[in-house]
Image (cartoon, rainbow, N blue to C red; front, side, top):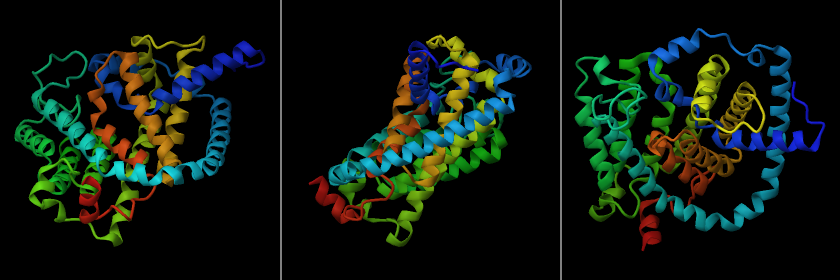
Length: 354
Protein backbone atom coordinates (compact mmCIF):
# COMPACT_ATOMS: atom_id res chain seq x y z
CA UNK A 1 0.00 0.00 0.00
CA UNK A 2 1.09 3.54 -0.71
CA UNK A 3 1.60 5.98 2.08
CA UNK A 4 0.77 9.67 1.72
CA UNK A 5 1.30 10.68 5.34
CA UNK A 6 4.13 13.08 4.61
CA UNK A 7 3.97 16.17 2.38
CA UNK A 8 6.76 14.77 0.20
CA UNK A 9 4.85 11.53 -0.36
CA UNK A 10 1.66 13.44 -1.10
CA UNK A 11 3.40 15.61 -3.69
CA UNK A 12 5.04 12.55 -5.24
CA UNK A 13 1.71 10.74 -5.51
CA UNK A 14 -0.02 13.79 -6.97
CA UNK A 15 2.77 14.24 -9.51
CA UNK A 16 2.64 10.70 -10.76
CA UNK A 17 -1.17 10.83 -10.88
CA UNK A 18 -0.98 13.93 -13.08
CA UNK A 19 1.53 12.21 -15.35
CA UNK A 20 -0.71 9.16 -15.56
CA UNK A 21 -3.68 11.30 -16.51
CA UNK A 22 -1.77 12.74 -19.43
CA UNK A 23 -0.74 9.37 -20.84
CA UNK A 24 -3.34 6.90 -19.67
CA UNK A 25 -5.67 7.26 -22.59
CA UNK A 26 -2.97 6.70 -25.19
CA UNK A 27 -0.92 3.79 -23.94
CA UNK A 28 -3.48 1.16 -24.85
CA UNK A 29 -2.49 0.28 -28.41
CA UNK A 30 1.25 0.50 -27.96
CA UNK A 31 1.63 -3.03 -26.69
CA UNK A 32 1.56 -4.45 -30.21
CA UNK A 33 3.32 -1.48 -31.79
CA UNK A 34 6.29 -0.94 -29.49
CA UNK A 35 7.01 -4.56 -28.60
CA UNK A 36 8.02 -7.38 -30.94
CA UNK A 37 5.77 -10.46 -31.16
CA UNK A 38 8.40 -12.50 -29.28
CA UNK A 39 8.49 -9.91 -26.50
CA UNK A 40 4.71 -9.98 -26.21
CA UNK A 41 4.67 -13.77 -25.93
CA UNK A 42 7.42 -13.75 -23.29
CA UNK A 43 5.78 -10.98 -21.25
CA UNK A 44 2.41 -12.70 -21.37
CA UNK A 45 3.97 -15.68 -19.59
CA UNK A 46 5.36 -13.58 -16.76
CA UNK A 47 3.39 -13.42 -13.49
CA UNK A 48 0.98 -10.52 -13.13
CA UNK A 49 2.07 -8.01 -10.45
CA UNK A 50 0.34 -8.59 -7.13
CA UNK A 51 -1.27 -5.15 -7.22
CA UNK A 52 -3.40 -6.32 -10.18
CA UNK A 53 -4.55 -9.50 -8.44
CA UNK A 54 -5.40 -8.08 -5.00
CA UNK A 55 -9.15 -7.64 -4.52
CA UNK A 56 -8.42 -5.21 -1.70
CA UNK A 57 -6.25 -2.95 -3.85
CA UNK A 58 -8.57 -3.15 -6.85
CA UNK A 59 -11.59 -2.44 -4.67
CA UNK A 60 -9.89 0.56 -3.10
CA UNK A 61 -8.89 1.78 -6.56
CA UNK A 62 -12.52 1.46 -7.70
CA UNK A 63 -13.73 3.53 -4.73
CA UNK A 64 -11.12 6.22 -5.42
CA UNK A 65 -12.14 6.20 -9.08
CA UNK A 66 -15.79 6.73 -8.17
CA UNK A 67 -14.89 9.61 -5.86
CA UNK A 68 -12.72 11.19 -8.55
CA UNK A 69 -15.55 10.85 -11.09
CA UNK A 70 -18.06 12.49 -8.76
CA UNK A 71 -15.60 15.31 -8.10
CA UNK A 72 -15.14 15.79 -11.84
CA UNK A 73 -18.89 15.95 -12.38
CA UNK A 74 -19.13 18.58 -9.64
CA UNK A 75 -16.44 20.63 -11.38
CA UNK A 76 -18.38 20.30 -14.65
CA UNK A 77 -21.29 22.17 -13.10
CA UNK A 78 -18.96 24.99 -12.08
CA UNK A 79 -17.33 25.47 -15.47
CA UNK A 80 -20.54 25.35 -17.53
CA UNK A 81 -21.01 29.16 -17.40
CA UNK A 82 -17.51 29.61 -18.81
CA UNK A 83 -18.20 27.11 -21.58
CA UNK A 84 -21.46 28.87 -22.39
CA UNK A 85 -19.63 32.17 -22.97
CA UNK A 86 -17.09 30.51 -25.27
CA UNK A 87 -19.64 28.30 -27.03
CA UNK A 88 -20.19 30.31 -30.25
CA UNK A 89 -16.50 30.66 -31.06
CA UNK A 90 -15.69 27.06 -30.12
CA UNK A 91 -18.50 25.56 -32.15
CA UNK A 92 -17.65 27.69 -35.18
CA UNK A 93 -14.07 26.38 -35.03
CA UNK A 94 -15.45 22.85 -34.77
CA UNK A 95 -16.77 23.17 -38.32
CA UNK A 96 -13.83 25.06 -39.81
CA UNK A 97 -10.48 24.07 -38.30
CA UNK A 98 -11.72 20.73 -36.96
CA UNK A 99 -12.57 19.03 -40.29
CA UNK A 100 -9.21 20.03 -41.77
CA UNK A 101 -7.26 18.48 -38.88
CA UNK A 102 -9.43 15.36 -39.00
CA UNK A 103 -9.01 14.92 -42.76
CA UNK A 104 -5.24 15.38 -42.72
CA UNK A 105 -4.74 13.18 -39.67
CA UNK A 106 -6.68 10.30 -41.16
CA UNK A 107 -5.04 10.77 -44.56
CA UNK A 108 -1.55 10.62 -43.06
CA UNK A 109 -2.28 7.46 -41.13
CA UNK A 110 -3.95 5.70 -44.08
CA UNK A 111 -1.18 6.61 -46.54
CA UNK A 112 1.63 5.63 -44.18
CA UNK A 113 -0.08 2.37 -43.25
CA UNK A 114 -0.57 1.45 -46.90
CA UNK A 115 3.08 2.12 -47.76
CA UNK A 116 4.62 0.57 -44.64
CA UNK A 117 5.56 3.95 -43.18
CA UNK A 118 4.07 3.13 -39.76
CA UNK A 119 5.77 -0.16 -38.89
CA UNK A 120 5.60 -1.92 -35.56
CA UNK A 121 8.75 -2.32 -33.49
CA UNK A 122 11.26 -4.63 -35.16
CA UNK A 123 9.89 -4.13 -38.68
CA UNK A 124 11.82 -2.10 -41.26
CA UNK A 125 10.03 0.95 -42.66
CA UNK A 126 8.43 0.73 -46.10
CA UNK A 127 8.50 -3.10 -46.09
CA UNK A 128 5.17 -4.14 -44.56
CA UNK A 129 1.94 -2.46 -45.70
CA UNK A 130 -0.69 -2.60 -42.98
CA UNK A 131 -4.38 -1.92 -42.55
CA UNK A 132 -4.79 1.35 -40.65
CA UNK A 133 -2.45 0.44 -37.76
CA UNK A 134 1.11 -0.92 -37.43
CA UNK A 135 0.35 -4.47 -36.28
CA UNK A 136 -2.35 -5.35 -38.84
CA UNK A 137 0.14 -6.53 -41.49
CA UNK A 138 -1.48 -7.32 -44.83
CA UNK A 139 1.24 -9.84 -45.65
CA UNK A 140 -0.34 -12.10 -43.03
CA UNK A 141 -3.58 -12.28 -45.01
CA UNK A 142 -2.70 -13.14 -48.65
CA UNK A 143 -5.15 -11.84 -51.20
CA UNK A 144 -5.94 -8.60 -49.41
CA UNK A 145 -3.32 -6.48 -51.17
CA UNK A 146 -6.19 -4.54 -52.74
CA UNK A 147 -6.50 -2.72 -49.43
CA UNK A 148 -3.22 -0.93 -50.19
CA UNK A 149 -4.49 1.12 -53.16
CA UNK A 150 -7.84 1.55 -51.43
CA UNK A 151 -6.17 3.22 -48.42
CA UNK A 152 -4.03 5.41 -50.67
CA UNK A 153 -7.08 6.46 -52.67
CA UNK A 154 -8.98 7.34 -49.50
CA UNK A 155 -5.99 9.34 -48.24
CA UNK A 156 -5.79 11.37 -51.48
CA UNK A 157 -9.49 12.21 -51.40
CA UNK A 158 -9.27 13.19 -47.74
CA UNK A 159 -6.40 15.58 -48.39
CA UNK A 160 -8.37 17.14 -51.22
CA UNK A 161 -11.57 17.20 -49.22
CA UNK A 162 -13.48 15.58 -52.07
CA UNK A 163 -16.53 13.36 -51.48
CA UNK A 164 -15.71 13.64 -47.77
CA UNK A 165 -18.97 12.28 -46.42
CA UNK A 166 -18.88 9.38 -48.87
CA UNK A 167 -15.32 8.65 -47.78
CA UNK A 168 -16.52 8.57 -44.19
CA UNK A 169 -18.96 5.83 -45.13
CA UNK A 170 -16.24 3.99 -47.08
CA UNK A 171 -13.95 4.16 -44.04
CA UNK A 172 -16.63 2.47 -41.95
CA UNK A 173 -16.64 -0.25 -44.58
CA UNK A 174 -12.85 -0.56 -44.27
CA UNK A 175 -13.26 -1.01 -40.51
CA UNK A 176 -15.74 -3.78 -41.22
CA UNK A 177 -13.24 -5.42 -43.58
CA UNK A 178 -10.60 -5.21 -40.85
CA UNK A 179 -12.89 -7.04 -38.43
CA UNK A 180 -13.67 -9.69 -41.04
CA UNK A 181 -10.04 -10.22 -42.08
CA UNK A 182 -8.20 -9.92 -38.75
CA UNK A 183 -10.98 -10.98 -36.40
CA UNK A 184 -11.00 -10.12 -32.72
CA UNK A 185 -7.50 -8.60 -32.86
CA UNK A 186 -8.93 -5.68 -34.83
CA UNK A 187 -11.61 -5.04 -32.21
CA UNK A 188 -9.13 -2.93 -30.27
CA UNK A 189 -8.95 -0.45 -33.15
CA UNK A 190 -12.39 -0.57 -34.75
CA UNK A 191 -14.15 2.00 -32.49
CA UNK A 192 -11.37 4.56 -32.89
CA UNK A 193 -11.64 4.47 -36.67
CA UNK A 194 -15.41 4.08 -36.93
CA UNK A 195 -15.93 7.17 -34.73
CA UNK A 196 -13.76 9.50 -36.88
CA UNK A 197 -15.61 8.16 -39.93
CA UNK A 198 -18.95 9.10 -38.36
CA UNK A 199 -17.61 12.56 -37.54
CA UNK A 200 -16.54 12.98 -41.19
CA UNK A 201 -20.07 12.14 -42.29
CA UNK A 202 -21.45 14.77 -39.93
CA UNK A 203 -19.07 17.69 -40.46
CA UNK A 204 -17.99 17.11 -44.05
CA UNK A 205 -14.73 18.45 -45.40
CA UNK A 206 -14.99 21.95 -43.95
CA UNK A 207 -14.52 25.29 -45.72
CA UNK A 208 -11.04 24.41 -47.06
CA UNK A 209 -12.14 21.41 -49.08
CA UNK A 210 -12.99 20.77 -52.72
CA UNK A 211 -16.44 19.73 -51.58
CA UNK A 212 -17.06 23.35 -50.63
CA UNK A 213 -15.87 24.66 -53.98
CA UNK A 214 -17.79 22.13 -56.06
CA UNK A 215 -20.96 22.29 -54.01
CA UNK A 216 -20.71 18.66 -52.95
CA UNK A 217 -20.84 19.75 -49.31
CA UNK A 218 -24.61 20.12 -49.68
CA UNK A 219 -25.00 16.45 -50.59
CA UNK A 220 -25.54 13.54 -48.23
CA UNK A 221 -25.90 15.79 -45.19
CA UNK A 222 -27.52 13.77 -42.39
CA UNK A 223 -31.01 14.87 -41.44
CA UNK A 224 -31.34 16.89 -38.24
CA UNK A 225 -33.43 14.12 -36.69
CA UNK A 226 -30.52 11.68 -36.72
CA UNK A 227 -27.57 14.08 -36.58
CA UNK A 228 -27.37 14.27 -32.80
CA UNK A 229 -27.80 10.51 -32.50
CA UNK A 230 -24.81 9.93 -34.78
CA UNK A 231 -22.80 12.51 -32.84
CA UNK A 232 -23.48 10.77 -29.55
CA UNK A 233 -22.72 7.40 -31.13
CA UNK A 234 -19.29 8.69 -32.15
CA UNK A 235 -18.59 9.77 -28.57
CA UNK A 236 -19.82 6.44 -27.21
CA UNK A 237 -17.59 4.54 -29.64
CA UNK A 238 -14.49 6.48 -28.62
CA UNK A 239 -15.26 6.14 -24.92
CA UNK A 240 -16.19 2.49 -25.25
CA UNK A 241 -12.95 1.85 -27.11
CA UNK A 242 -10.93 3.26 -24.23
CA UNK A 243 -12.83 1.24 -21.62
CA UNK A 244 -12.43 -1.94 -23.67
CA UNK A 245 -8.70 -1.42 -24.07
CA UNK A 246 -8.19 -0.59 -20.41
CA UNK A 247 -9.98 -3.75 -19.26
CA UNK A 248 -8.79 -6.20 -21.92
CA UNK A 249 -5.17 -5.05 -22.09
CA UNK A 250 -4.17 -3.12 -18.99
CA UNK A 251 -6.07 -5.07 -16.34
CA UNK A 252 -5.48 -8.53 -17.75
CA UNK A 253 -2.04 -8.03 -19.34
CA UNK A 254 -0.35 -5.29 -17.29
CA UNK A 255 3.12 -6.75 -17.94
CA UNK A 256 2.94 -5.43 -21.51
CA UNK A 257 2.19 -1.87 -20.43
CA UNK A 258 4.84 -2.02 -17.71
CA UNK A 259 7.42 -3.15 -20.26
CA UNK A 260 6.56 -0.20 -22.50
CA UNK A 261 6.94 2.26 -19.63
CA UNK A 262 10.31 0.70 -18.75
CA UNK A 263 11.52 0.81 -22.36
CA UNK A 264 10.53 4.46 -22.57
CA UNK A 265 12.18 5.15 -19.21
CA UNK A 266 9.15 7.06 -18.05
CA UNK A 267 9.89 9.04 -14.86
CA UNK A 268 8.35 7.29 -11.87
CA UNK A 269 8.56 9.95 -9.14
CA UNK A 270 9.59 7.15 -6.80
CA UNK A 271 6.57 4.93 -7.47
CA UNK A 272 6.79 1.47 -8.98
CA UNK A 273 5.76 0.81 -12.56
CA UNK A 274 2.91 -1.52 -11.50
CA UNK A 275 1.43 1.31 -9.42
CA UNK A 276 1.75 3.71 -12.36
CA UNK A 277 0.11 1.17 -14.65
CA UNK A 278 -2.82 0.76 -12.24
CA UNK A 279 -3.32 4.53 -12.04
CA UNK A 280 -3.26 4.75 -15.83
CA UNK A 281 -5.82 1.96 -16.09
CA UNK A 282 -8.20 3.74 -13.73
CA UNK A 283 -7.84 7.07 -15.49
CA UNK A 284 -8.49 5.50 -18.88
CA UNK A 285 -11.65 3.80 -17.61
CA UNK A 286 -12.89 7.06 -16.09
CA UNK A 287 -12.22 9.05 -19.28
CA UNK A 288 -13.92 6.42 -21.41
CA UNK A 289 -16.93 6.22 -19.11
CA UNK A 290 -17.35 10.00 -19.14
CA UNK A 291 -17.32 10.04 -22.95
CA UNK A 292 -19.91 7.27 -23.03
CA UNK A 293 -22.10 9.24 -20.62
CA UNK A 294 -21.61 12.46 -22.58
CA UNK A 295 -20.14 14.30 -19.59
CA UNK A 296 -17.08 16.56 -19.48
CA UNK A 297 -16.63 16.03 -23.22
CA UNK A 298 -14.37 19.05 -23.69
CA UNK A 299 -11.98 18.46 -20.75
CA UNK A 300 -11.71 14.73 -21.46
CA UNK A 301 -11.01 15.40 -25.14
CA UNK A 302 -8.23 17.83 -24.21
CA UNK A 303 -6.77 15.22 -21.85
CA UNK A 304 -6.67 12.70 -24.68
CA UNK A 305 -4.98 15.16 -27.05
CA UNK A 306 -2.40 15.89 -24.35
CA UNK A 307 -1.98 12.17 -23.73
CA UNK A 308 -1.15 11.43 -27.35
CA UNK A 309 1.44 14.16 -27.49
CA UNK A 310 2.97 13.45 -24.09
CA UNK A 311 3.28 9.75 -24.74
CA UNK A 312 4.94 10.38 -28.09
CA UNK A 313 7.56 12.53 -26.35
CA UNK A 314 8.12 10.14 -23.44
CA UNK A 315 8.42 7.01 -25.59
CA UNK A 316 10.23 8.71 -28.46
CA UNK A 317 7.59 7.65 -30.98
CA UNK A 318 5.80 9.44 -33.79
CA UNK A 319 2.51 11.19 -32.93
CA UNK A 320 1.16 9.77 -36.19
CA UNK A 321 0.49 6.49 -34.35
CA UNK A 322 -2.71 8.22 -33.17
CA UNK A 323 -3.37 10.59 -36.04
CA UNK A 324 -6.85 9.10 -36.37
CA UNK A 325 -7.80 10.59 -33.00
CA UNK A 326 -6.32 14.08 -33.22
CA UNK A 327 -9.06 15.59 -35.35
CA UNK A 328 -11.85 13.68 -33.64
CA UNK A 329 -10.78 14.80 -30.18
CA UNK A 330 -10.28 18.37 -31.40
CA UNK A 331 -13.81 18.49 -32.81
CA UNK A 332 -15.20 16.97 -29.60
CA UNK A 333 -13.29 19.56 -27.57
CA UNK A 334 -14.65 22.39 -29.70
CA UNK A 335 -18.24 21.28 -30.25
CA UNK A 336 -18.91 19.67 -26.86
CA UNK A 337 -21.65 17.18 -26.14
CA UNK A 338 -24.07 18.30 -28.86
CA UNK A 339 -23.62 19.64 -32.37
CA UNK A 340 -24.27 23.36 -32.82
CA UNK A 341 -27.66 23.85 -34.42
CA UNK A 342 -26.70 27.23 -35.88
CA UNK A 343 -23.89 25.99 -38.12
CA UNK A 344 -24.79 22.36 -38.60
CA UNK A 345 -26.07 22.82 -42.13
CA UNK A 346 -24.06 23.55 -45.28
CA UNK A 347 -25.59 26.98 -45.80
CA UNK A 348 -24.58 28.18 -42.36
CA UNK A 349 -21.16 26.62 -42.72
CA UNK A 350 -20.48 28.60 -45.88
CA UNK A 351 -21.58 31.74 -44.08
CA UNK A 352 -19.15 31.03 -41.20
CA UNK A 353 -16.31 30.30 -43.63
CA UNK A 354 -16.94 33.57 -45.43
